[in-house]
Length: 163
Image (cartoon, rainbow, N blue to C red; front, top):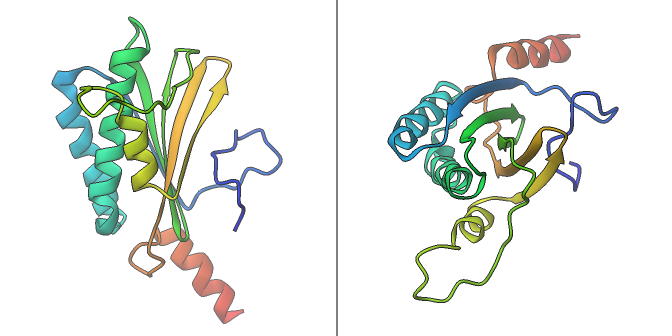
């Protein structure tokens, strides 16, 4: 497994197509956060990644809160989930060029704990600058079971064993 788990642009020679992929365009406003969480949870359950529901939903919520609070007036963003054997990568892309800062919040501060929480929940996380803004992403270790693999991946693996 690569030590660099960051999402690679599709035009990158090292880009590896995911086994399953889901993209949702949303507006990161408080009235939509619950709905967005439910969409992420439903997708993970569809992929049989029930063990990742809580950490992924919590981390996505934190990243959406950051978009709402720090991305400026444009609250539109894209959530992307990519499943590969043994790994789930989730990214939240927005149109702001402002990169996130990880600080050490005072115990009485009401803000500043989102990215440390994402770091604690994930295998790895990071931020990638893009021409149209940035993507903040995290990875979670995913179970490698027949149920957790998309149908196409199960078919490819079965064909490889029978060959």
